[in-house]
Length: 178
Image (cartoon, rainbow, N blue to C red):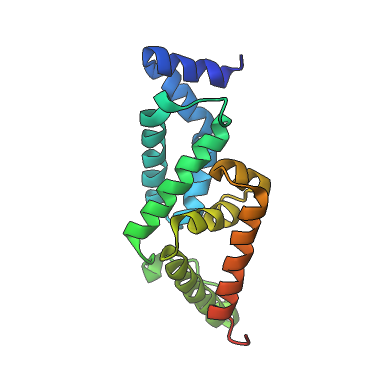
């Protein structure tokens, strides 16, 4: 049995605080990076990361490694929490003095890109949570289609179909040349 499974077992059987800390430490940086890509803000990412791990530890008693690997199960919870957080937060705003502004010639393009990203995020946030999860895991979690399929307990072809259908909708909605 690997170390991860020992920690999980200790948490499930004895409620071991030390094992919970070890498990969180093992995945914290990875989940924080995922949360950062979701929120674009360090404090919001820390809050989201904390919410993800609280949910994981609360639900750990129902985790069954025969159904999914721990990382897969963890990302399923993380994706759902990211969708929930995005739904509550709405579009992100950053004070102008905190922006990392590009050179003057690139400024207009950067503003347009940021505005477009915010519009796309707003659009995607209004869609079915399952489609949002596919989008977020692929774009922000940098997960492959097979990984997303495992995380969401769907076939790879269903995940690809949802993702490419969404891309088509985004192109139709946001491409000025389309």
